[in-house]
Length: 365
Image (cartoon, rainbow, N blue to C red; front, side, top):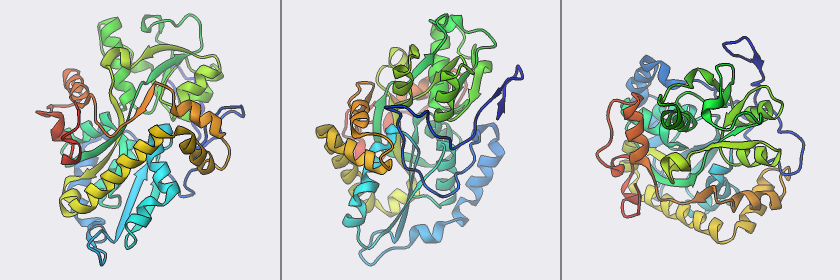
């Protein structure tokens, strides 16, 4: 349970099944315990400690080579949700295992970008996936990582149930807005909207309640919270249940990268051949998804254990609010706004400073 400033208790148990209804999206999750959701950057000392010890943790296993010169073992971490569909499809197809027969791949699903970050700093995770805001925040604190590729551009929507909530100015101090964390890309969207509509980027910070997307959906539909700033497919499911869109990230930033695949710079340099091949395989997977969303939907339905129909997945995969691409868009704009409101102390000279050469010839930004 999460207790808000006003004393209201909100359900945050995880994992919890989505409401039993047609179209609710489910993803098969790992049976391993998930890393607890925490806000990484409220404790700079903890991050510094991780950075200082990173070379001693997991480094031997991460640098072992197979007989063909490829890494002996690669752990890939992703998170729940439609945004990670290209990685889920790669896992489902076994393509990487076929392309790198002497490499052992371990796939793990974690609950947040912060958890992925911790695993990468320690050396336990070699390939991670997460949001641009968390990635840039860690880069500013000294984490030497970059994006190998984007996974998608996505619109992030602030959803509301109450008819009185038509703009941000309608939210009062007691109207709670759920999102993953105060450092999430969703928090950045809310602050950009607050700056535009209210004249103060942090005007609604006290309204934010950290909550997982599935819990946010349930609490919004049941009326326990006023708003939910979420992502595909949860916002689509909420819209199907009668919730309304109050704010869209695309109206504030234009097209922006939601999630991408990153590596530590040292790992990339030590495994450049593997990394570039991985990128090419991912690029082909994203192309196949775009060319044949029906086939991708069937595979994702199988991955969900049949809990979500292929028809529902295809509907969500083809929604214009999400576009799968390896091109990173809006990184410079995201970093610039984060610097403007004091979330980071510096900005990259170019979006290429946050990415590897795999995408430098693309139309990134």
